[in-house]
Length: 75
Image (cartoon, rainbow, N blue to C red):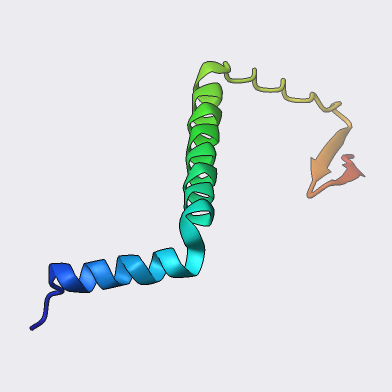
């Protein structure tokens, strides 16, 4: 009694087809497939691009230092 029989699944399928129609259902599946392909292509592009070089650290002068974005003169 806890599981659905084949007849329950057939009724569900008929209701879904009546609500969405064959054209709308195939259109939704096509859109989902396009989304998956775009996602896979994006993941492949990310793997192919080399990582960017890290920026060189900026050098501060001896008489200045940076503390939390503010410059203060050191004695």
